Image 1 (spheres, rainbow, N blue to C red):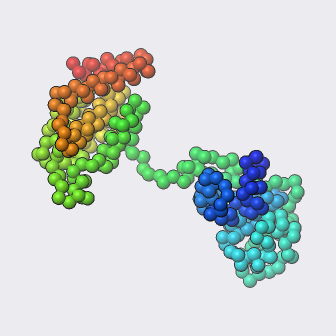
Image 2: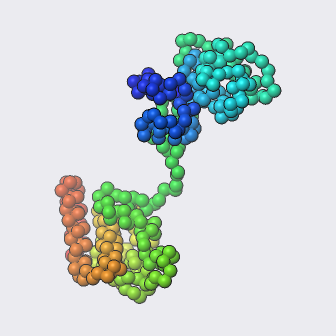
Image 3: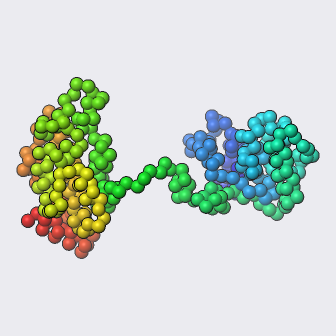
Amino acid sequence: MLTGSSLWGKWIRAKLLKGRSFWEVNVRMQTGSWMWHKMLKLRSVAKLFYKVEVGNGRHISFWYDNWSRQGVLMDLLGARGIIDMGVGKNATVEDAVLYGRRRRRHRLSILNDIEDELAIIRSNSSLEEVDRSLWRRDSGYKLEFSTQETWQILRDKKPLCNWAQGIWFTQATPKFAFMAWLSVRDRMSTMDRVVKWSRGSNDMCVLCYNAPESRNHLFFECDISAEVWEFIAKGLLRQDFTVDWSEIISIISDKAREKKSLLCTRYAFQAVLYALWRERNKLKHGKKMMPLPVLKKVIEKGIRNRITLVQKKGGRGMEMLMQFWFQTRM
């Protein structure tokens, strides 16, 4: 593997590789930093993104670098290939071209294919040509490495969630948004989920004890949570007001809605979720829940304070947002 002419690359070659290829170094070697060992462990992934273009072949490992059309020769032929090809384990492509034993025919077709490649390099080789590292990109192998494109190729891609912007918006409070995200994915420890791993548990709603507690019941089919949600959101949503979970998620994900209304609705939704879950957990652990009138005022005050903070940072547009919020409370 080409390590470049940087000081770090030179130090790696001198102190850690010591004439060996990066691809053959034992991952359990004692020398090197934790970062070096992390790099060694990721070589199987890096191999999928790296190959070299032969120039003079001086800095390309014959056995360990991906220079051949066949692939990495050590992976294909193993140690036996060293004997069959007559090329030393630490040889470069230049060594194989200049000092390898005279070309001969082999029983295995893959060995003959490699000999043909060496013959082509031998006839085209030039001392002035430099070896070049190539990196896998969306459009093929290129000279420039792209972190972004490499990540996009590596990452486990999932369909885009239409609700994502309704949860992860700029003005959100991080702890509110995280809890809303868990709720949308139905990963909260509601009683319908608890009973699956704790047999004998009571699955009734902790707030109202009128129905089994699920995500959809708690937000906002439960009489208590519905009352809080109505107090906060009825003025915002007006004729669109609903306590149905899927409809609420559809509303906060609707980019076509008026911006001020959408922002206030998104933040109010998350604030109510967080406050109700906090009060629900108080009851679950034997504490008293905050009186409903007080809880409503606390949530409203929190939303108002957040909008005020956003207004100070955002200027005139956010001042209009504050006016809009107060109009909904009248």
